[in-house]
Image (tube, rainbow, N blue to C red):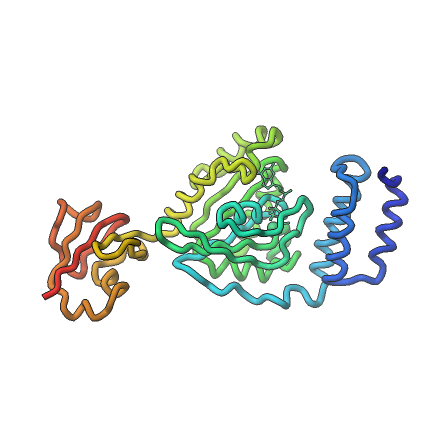
Length: 306
Ligand SMILES: Nc1nc2c(ncn2[C@@H]2O[C@H](COP(=O)(O)OP(=O)(O)OP(=O)(O)O)[C@@H](O)[C@H]2O)c(=O)[nH]1
Ligand SMILES: [Mg+2]
C-alpha cells in the first residue's frame, strides 16, 4: 500500500536532511526506485520534485563532475548523444553497442559520459552517452558547460528527442546548442515512436527538422538500421577495398590514393608505380590513376609497384 502523499513527502524530507552532492543524488535515486509506480497525481508530483532536486543537487555540488574531465577519443570518429534527460540516450547506446548501460525512468540516470564503440561498415565509431542537457546549460545548469565543451570537440551530434513529451522542451535544448555556436554534423532522432503518445508530435517534428531526421524506438528496434546508415553518412568516412585485406581501409571523405597507401604502409609509396581503381570515383572499371586521385566510398584499389 502506498503511503498517503503528505506522509511520504515528510519521510523523504527526513531522508534527505544533511545530504549534499553525490550522496544526496544517490539517496534521491534510491527513493525514486522505491516509490510506488504512479506517474500522475500526487505521486507524480513527488517524482517530479525529486527529479528537480537531482538537478539542483548536481548544480550546487562542489564535486560537480570532478571525476571526469573529457572523453578520450577512440576509433575513427566520435559522436555524442545529446538530449534532455530520459529521452532514451542510454537505451539507444546500449541497443547499438550491446553494452549494458544503466537505463531508468527517472531523469539524470547517467551522471558522466559513457563511451562505447560500434562497428559500422568496417569503421570503429565511438558513441558517447552524455548526461541529459537541461535549459540554461550554457550558463552551466546541470553541469552544462562541461557537456557543451565535449559537444564542441566531437565530430558529430546525435540529438535525441522524446516524442511523447512536448516538443518545445527539446527545442529549448536545441537552442542551447545554437547559443553555444555549435555547428557539427547533426542527426535528429525522434524516439519512442512505439508509444501512442508520440503520434501527435510526429508531423510537427517532421516539419521542424526536414533533413537528417530518423524516427526510432529503442524498445522495438524501429529505425535503428536507418540511424546506423545516417551515422555512417554523417561520419564522412569512406571504405576502400584492397585485394589482400578482408576489411576495407577506412579513410576520411576526399582522401587520395596517396593517403590510402599511407594508411597501409608508407614504404609502398617509394615503390609506387600506379593505382588501378574501380567504383564510383573511376571513369570506367580498372582505370589507371596516380597518387593524387580522390577515392570514393566503396572503391576498390590495386596498387602496382615497380
Ligand atoms: N516507450 C519507450 N520508452 C523508451 C524508449 N527508449 C527509452 N525508453 C524509456 O525511457 C526511460 C529513459 O531512458 P534512458 O535510456 O535512461 O534515458 P536517458 O536519455 O539516458 O536519460 P538520462 O540518463 O536521465 O539523461 C526509460 O524508462 C526507458 O525504458 C522507447 O523507444 N520507447
Ligand atoms: Mg542515460
